[in-house]
Length: 180
Image (cartoon, rainbow, N blue to C red):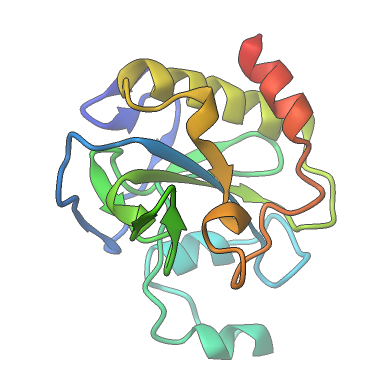
């Protein structure tokens, strides 16, 4: 259930990397991402640290280029299905970067971003698909401009820059779970 922009089943964490949407009534796209920090490693604190603006850039060589990066997502779904929400849905999370969809630029303005802990090549877990489908269904109910047809991967809105959630993401299985 979504209440005041927050998913009641999620662990709430208020990321500083958010702001007001230009039009809070225009929530019309759901973007699925994949993330792991360091690349290919799961279960550590680093994704949370990144979204909270607390990443120790000296903790791993891969983190050095992330220094100064201000990024967040609305939600993160961990490998075990645990959900953390960083930004209320009615506010703009900073997840899409330079992006466009159906001729519109700046997807952050009108999109909700959900990160899956994973990589382009490692299969996502059954628990992640179940949680993602449940959250997507709740979002479609709460925000009438969203629909099954307006769910995309990061690679679809920033194809030159991004590849996630990648070939390991099983779109057919996700839509099967979404149908229920």
